[in-house]
Length: 278
Image (cartoon, rainbow, N blue to C red; front, side, top):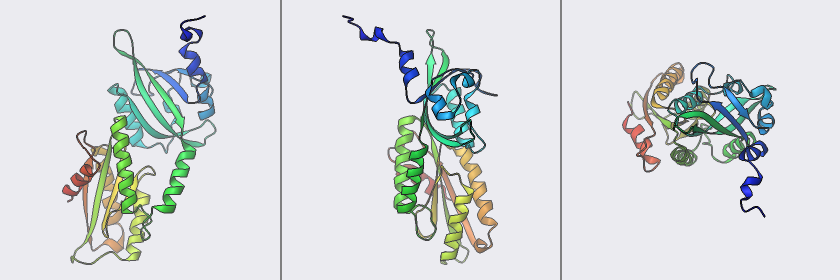
């Protein structure tokens, strides 16, 4: 009787038979077209439509599309450059042209000398989960006047992102803004609130969470976004609202903040965004 059952199979057999997609690339080059794929398991064909043979010699970036967010691309690149593990969600495109969401888990593989020689990526198709998540969220958690997330739903989304970022060593930023009338006490009416909600949905990405915290205060949660990219979002928001006549008499105050490793709870980043309002 074999005292070591692991000798009856190899780990390659397990990976080949796995239901989640697995891709292994070289560690370089990071720039340009990106690292070359040297292994892909059979599950990748079910997920992407490409056979392992079609993937070999190419780069994982062949799976991305125009709608893949710049923030997601940058986050992956930054972690590869620093040889850090990462888990994130990204929008990809199948061979057929159909879009799909995957949750990526990328880990560096080191050789006997301790140098990173390859990266392994485990990919799980979460498209159906994302659709259900959006359906349930839209049905129960939207503010009735603006059709963005209510305060309770937004704070719940913030807590989930804080926990996810803590577990997976990723980052995110908040953009908090407040509309203040030039004469002081005037509040936004229903038509202005509806227009503001529509404008925010148009200006920000699908993966961003937009919430109404109070009568005139709103916040955008931007996953996988550092403070530099958040600054670009500030410009988009100011220009977008500034171009709308109904808000001509309102001053837009904006504060941003990025996740800090020392944050002990999700409210810390919200407090920093508040303190940065200008």
